[in-house]
Image (cartoon, rainbow, N blue to C red):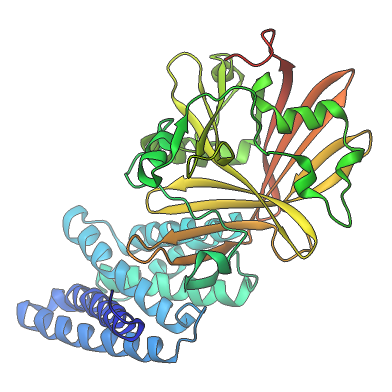
Amino acid sequence: MAPDGERAAGSRIGQVGAAAAIGGLAGAALFGHRGARRAMIGAVGGAFGLGISEAVARARQRPGEIPPLWQRIATTSALMAPLGWAAGRFTGVGPVVVGTASGAVVGAFGLRPQKVVLGPMVGAVVGLGAGRRRRVPMAVVASATVAAYRMLSAGLFRDAQVSLLAEQVLAEDLPFVVPLEARSRYVGTGYVRALARYLGGTYHGDAADVGIVATLDELAGPDFDPAAVDRRVREFYEHTTRFSLDIVPEWRRWVRPGYLLYRSVLARPLGQASVPMNQREALRGIRSRIDTITLDRDDVVAIRGWIRSFADNDEPIYVGIYTTYRHGGRGYVSVGFPLPQASFTATLEPRARPGGGLVLTSRSVLDHPGHYLTYIDPATRELTTLAVHGFAEQLDVYVEDDELRAEHAFWMFGLPFLVLHYRIHPKPSGGAS
């Protein structure tokens, strides 16, 4: 394995090279309307300029930081220039259309509703301004739109929804992250079986009488006493396979178009995080099972994967790896959702609910609860992790009318967008699938 210094130098060269390539394409697009010679000069100048700025930005970058805002703005503006050139060259649309479309794209990547609306508004203004001048290249319109939007957005929306938490650190440095990734482009219901082969462990598919946690006692802390939890709630967590679940999804209307696009383009091709859109889909039935892995010829379960899929064809709904850990005298639940060479982790704080219920929530003042997107280096196993501040969730399991129920609520940018309502029933056979 190469020393850390050599690996860092190699990574720096690759980053500068990528920036130079982006700058070259942007320069060619921005000056291409003046002929091949000017396009070539623009490409050389763009490559040199953006490459140098990337080198400076990376040299000033401290551990655990992302590149400075000015460099990120320069890079994204350069990325949009070739797209603007292509739109003008092959479609013949004008500056207002190009500006509005460019703003819509960059605004959509901002995710928050305010940014989604702001993007096309800025683009339209830039396009209108360009339309009053003669022969403004569409590459310039697109690039200027992105630069204007990003500078305005940085001034208006100062609370970061995503931040770099750690870069190339060991897994033990981030106990609240589940460092288990998918080693192929598809996660699917066979993930735990594939993971067992990789780890050299013993796979137990659809394990009998196991829970998503070994015992609630692992979650004890100053603000949570497991002894106060209703026995039925405790049984659900410690012996989850004894129960069947009926689900009723309740989506907010504003998020439905975006979710339909996400599910078609990303979730279903990945075989991960594809929640039913409505009650009609939920009536297909939900199959719930827990696959486990034991290691070192030990009977102790090392990995628990809770897998939910549609009953009619086993299409994945989600695959979650459930873990518990203790820190500072408190217990936490961390759920890892494997992604290709990455993992999305939800770390939740346990809280008592009146009447013996249990709440697991990421909406906490403590340091560890939250959501984390992690890239796992396949060679070194080092983690690079983003904290996703704009996402929150809360799972509330309780007894009502002598029946187990649960509500799983989700927020984005502080706005509620989904609640999954569960009715939880003991299986007649006492745990058989």
